[in-house]
Image 1 (cartoon, one colour):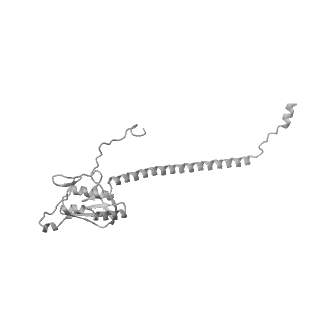
Image 2 (image 1 turned 45 degrees about the vertical axis):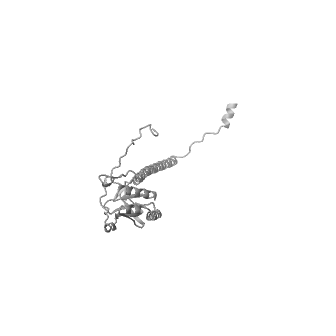
Amino acid sequence: MIAIQFQTVKKPVERDTRDIWQLREALLKEKELQSQLLTDIRSNDAKLAVYESKKKQSKEEVLRETLTELKREAGLTEATGPGVVLTIEPVTEAIKLGEPVAKVVSPDLLKRLLNELNLDEAKYVSIDGQRIINTTVIRDINKETKIDGHSVRSLPIEVKVVAENMSKAEKLYNRMKASKSAEEFFIENLRLTVSKPTASVTVPAYENPIRIRYMEPVKDGKGGNP
């Protein structure tokens, strides 16, 4: 009795009554859907490839910008900006007084001048066409003033100074006008003059090779992540 009751309650199996044309139409729709899905996948893959390429290019661009900035800070590139130009020349009035005319500027005077310029926030400096960087050496060799091997043999010479902005260039100009450096140069029969600030002063790039001492590449597992 239970088996008979189960057979009477269970719903009959529904049969697919669509004809062959209806089945073909349904199959066509499924193929169209599959084709659209494949197209969407290819489109998304292409977009991902573009994004990855841009991401890679962005990293390379950041590295290039960082390298350029490091070269700029190291003095390996030409620098242009607001600044002043200082001129060092002999005091011609000394001839009338029978005093010897200065033909060269001593390393000590140049060093004191550089120290003062750095205190006055000079950003980039060149002396007699030679870029001054952190490792620059100014010294006397056989009674000849040399800047990293470059001989300062004749006067007048120019000291070009680039400041961070026009405001600092004007401040540097005012400080140099009131500085005692002019007196120190005058004692050596030299005249130090400062030009008015201008929006465009160019100092050349450092041309000598930079020697790095006491530094070596970090090996794997030392000084950072392996």
